[in-house]
Amino acid sequence: MLSAGDPMTTLHDFTLKALDGSELPLRDFRGKAVLLVNVASRCGYTPQYKGLQALWTELRDRGLVVCGVPANEFGAQEPGTDQQIQSFCEARYQVTFPMASKLVVKGPGQHPLYAWLTGDASAPGDVQWNFEKFLIDREGRIAGRFRSDVTPESAALREALAKVL
Image (cartoon, rainbow, N blue to C red; front, side):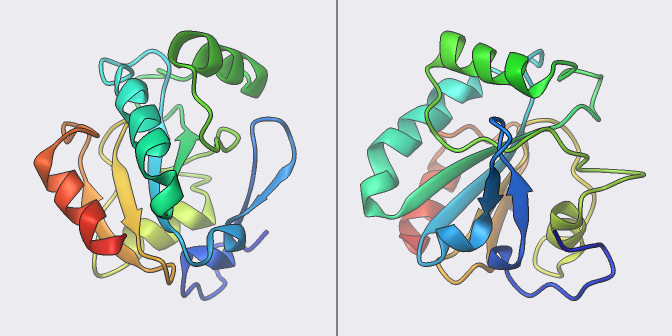
């Protein structure tokens, strides 16, 4: 895993841990567009899991990867273990898209991936809340950023997805 001091150029430079404990090398997504979303199980935006799963089902054959990244920085709305998070997502929303292990997206201990995402000139600034979305193009570069209130069904997100697919 890369550290915060390493120069990052694309999403493909990072490796996360998956909910099941295996490695999730983001280089495996090379050539695909990625919608990276920090998620939480006890948030008012949690029903967006349904729309994210629908995007994954609809667009994965066209090259979209939806990737959930559980985080607990906002109102402690993701307190569970990786196993609890996985069970919740599968039982409640039938999530089949890739899910990372819980990590820190803001503040002390921020994961290097989120330091890169929020430090990039195209999408600067801290993550504000759960279900914030980063759209990454097929080359691993940030192509868009969408706040929590932009749903997976929104016209703005759909237009951005169309451009990178």
